Image 1 (cartoon, rainbow, N blue to C red):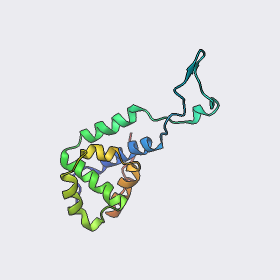
Image 2 (cartoon, helix red, strand yellow):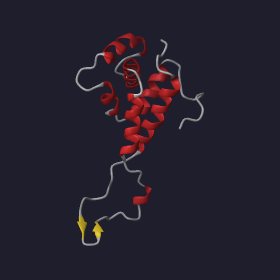
Image 3 (cartoon, one colour):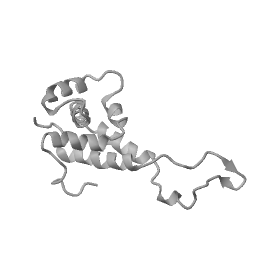
Image 4 (cartoon, one colour):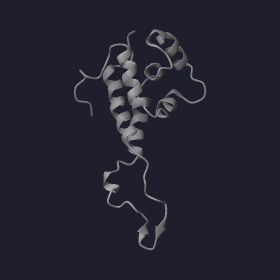
Length: 137
């Protein structure tokens, strides 16, 4: 199996997806009183890396930069990483990813809660990794 998608591009998505997975929903209530937003955890709010649109938009933009066949490759890798397919079923995974039912490939990838881990496991199934890629921004 030879990837059409450059490994450094896959690794860049993994890094951003890891950032996305690490973020948590805000614990700020929607309530506001005369003094402003009501919060009970002021001492701990600084420790929370809340979900924000910028990381999600970066991942979506990175996916949009890929050709359709490369997005299908990413989805197939994620499926292999999460156990939906085995490495030996690569052609079948690519075929199914190339003809998605329902959501687009990018939407399916964005909806995976452990996308970074699945992509890493998918790469490992083919003895590939991001270890030798160097610094990825």
